[in-house]
Amino acid sequence: QVQLQESGPGLVKPSETLSLTCSVSGASIISYYWSWIRQPPGKGLEWIGYISDIGRTNYNPSLKSRVTISLDMSKKQLSLKLSSVTAADTAMYYCVRQQDLLWFDPWGQGTLVTVSS
Amino acid sequence: QSVLTQPPSASGTPGQRVTISCSGSTSNIGSYTVNWYQQLPGTAPKLLIYSNNQRPSGVPDRFSGSKSGTSASLAISGLRSEDEADYYCAAWDDSLNGWVFGGGTKLTVL
Image (cartoon, rainbow over all chains, first blue to last red; front, side, top):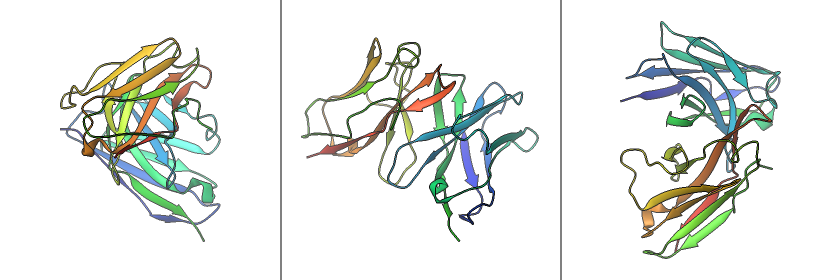
């Protein structure tokens, strides 16, 4: 059974860089894409970007200038870095396995990141 | 403003059939398959319907999906109290070269 577990600081200061890690267990990294999706409190879902098993990335145009997603195959870990954060980046951040350009399944439980001084 | 348009709310009584719509354009729903996600209160979203009308293992057949042109629908029959959740549609979008979601529909079981 595939399990995804996000981790990272729950509080980040404005203008700093948000850094999260997602650990994958119960499945291979190979042959899948891996995405980050976020959800501000009380709001809808926003796709941040994905990385393929060979390191190809694609980011949401609205976040592209601030986002970096990387993959550590040996550790089976996905990471997200979002720079120059503001209060608008406060959200639950989900790590998700992506089946090609088809669907997201499964989802991690999510980690809440608050941007505040 | 979400790229895909969903009604913000829907409701029904136990046993009823409810449908939730999702409207898009030729660059997303019109060209790619639609997925639906269910988000129970306080939990992460879960894949409910994939490839327009397919149910993952474990999803009851009370849930069904359909697509026509640039719109899609999720139908829930035999409504139960545990179906109370937020429902999101999603599709790949060629113009944005990325995934787009609907704004979500909050389903209330009266």
